[in-house]
Amino acid sequence: MVATLTSAVLLTTLVNRPIEAASIAVKEGQKIGFMGDSITQAGAEPQGYVTLVIRGLEANGIQATAVPAGISGHKSNQMLERLDRDVLSKKPDWMTLSCGVNDVWHGANGIPLDAYKKNITEIVEKSQAAGVKVMILTSTMIGEDAPNSNNQKLATYNDFLRDLAKKKKCRLADLNADMQAAITKAGPDHKGNLLTSDGVHMNPGGNRMMATGVLKAFGLSAKQLKKAQDSWSKPATATAH
Image (cartoon, rainbow, N blue to C red; front, top):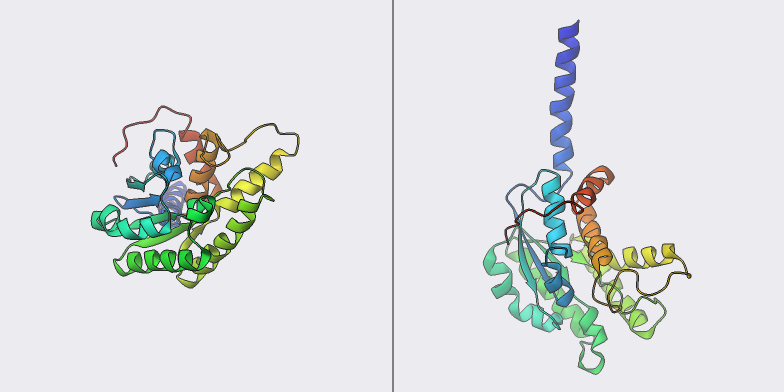
């Protein structure tokens, strides 16, 4: 009877372990390209969201490699222009795409919505044609006050990203929604910026918010997200890029 129970426990453990691992879309040894602007460029720093994503996967038993591809000030047209050089030539398995803040924030020097739609669609289609799985990140806020004119304009860009993710069967990390929810939860009595250093660029809390959103979109469960978040408070080990 004891032997039977022991065998049953072992069998349950062996069955459950692959199911848990299978819930995470990124697999052992895969590479993730991180295409973006200054937020993503800073994200490759030790406490940036790119690094935290890799550390969060590692905490859950998956060794993955980051291919950082963030350049300060870049908009959708520039990301499209350098897609092959900075991402596709590195042959990643995945690419996260974070683009839209500068397209709106730069005003007259930005990218109108119609052109933005064309650029982003081409980035996604070229990546998928190269065998790269794409995760779309909605653009984070431009100032931590949702009603301002930039955020109202940005909402139309993010609506397009949500629709495109469905149309192209991309994973979606709705970071704009996550950011707004965090600010709303903090309440009106909160003083200063909660997730950014200047209303746009992430502070440590903002980087953790972004990394959590990306990991959630990769399929991590609440338990796995907690394990990832706990790992961020520990000394970092060397991470390959």
